[in-house]
Image 1 (cartoon, rainbow, N blue to C red):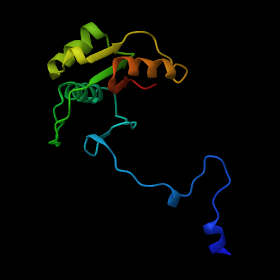
Image 2: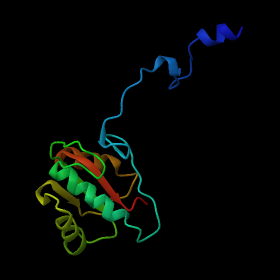
Image 3: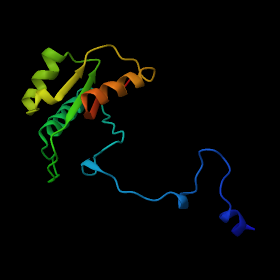
Length: 140
């Protein structure tokens, strides 16, 4: 009886057996830390450097240079930053410049954004800017 159950496929919508899902490899931008097309969270106490790390990643993506511990160089790509806390002119741009970002490849979303209600709007901005990295700071 157990063998019969194992051979039947699920009739529930949205449910697949793991044996029916072909494995794929992860496309990394920062090996072991930042995967392409996946959600990555930097969590920690205020002042622990989360934004600094995120902006350094933006700088690396826009220059196509490896991140710490990685030796792979990638093509330079665009990034999009949505920041509800830091001002673009007095905080983000100076910090991006200090990190060596290609500022021409960094796009800063300056309008108020309410997620998840405006996720389609955000997706449209991502497509129009051709950004491959999105930084939401903070995600709240």
